[in-house]
Image 1: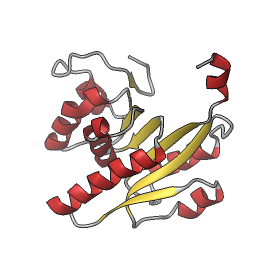
Image 2: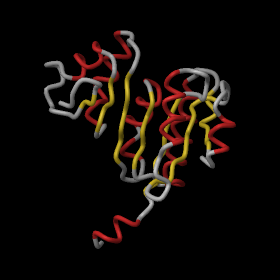
Image 3: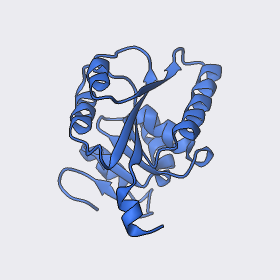
Image 4: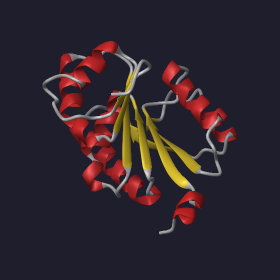
Length: 176
């Protein structure tokens, strides 16, 4: 493929977030989508849950398609259906970049990566995690291409001796 053709391709990006509530992470997503170069990128948003849709009207006004995994009760059967929906949607949309926002989307995106079409995976972390959640994130972190972190403890965990593989971690202070 020639360089000029690659430069003119519109790259599909899937932003995967728990919900569209009125929180800070959701507002960051809205700001990003408001200023995204639509001549180069085609965004879509996937939510884990159907409730807390505060920013849905804003995304619709930006002409950003919104999909949902329709997660409800935390049962094993329901989680299996959620994973199946995620993989199915990934094959339908075939995004080149998947940006997972926060813990649960990170886990789904990382654990299902090999069942999906090839893509770059960006994960992010903001809040303190329980010890169990931190272990899961550390176990699956080799699946991502980039991790965006703005929490000191998550930065330390990502760069710990338990995870010797060098990965890119972007934080507000530096890139390592």
